[in-house]
Length: 105
Image (cartoon, rainbow, N blue to C red; front, side):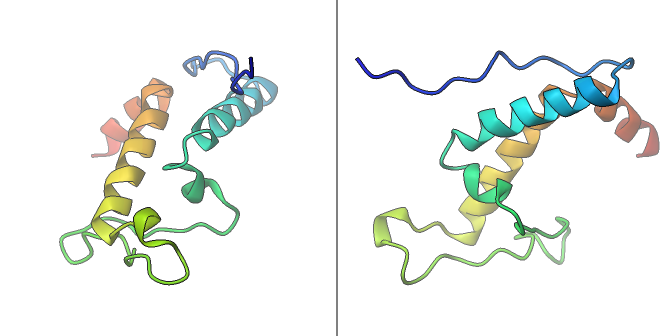
């Protein structure tokens, strides 16, 4: 019976992380997210996206075209939704960062 790859259970960041524990957290989360084919493209070297705004609700994404097979193509709106899901997953594990962001907004 073949086993599927699994990463250690993800843990939340704390206010007392060292550089080493932060890097371990980041690598584990990156690996875990890369196992989902919907999130993997956002984790590739050189992957970029724009800031969401009223004038740029699609973050600069465009719909997939050739040579991507028709059944695997995604619209720009689908890419935005998947990116938002991935960023939400990251935010779930770093409440320290979320607290800092809430202070600035």
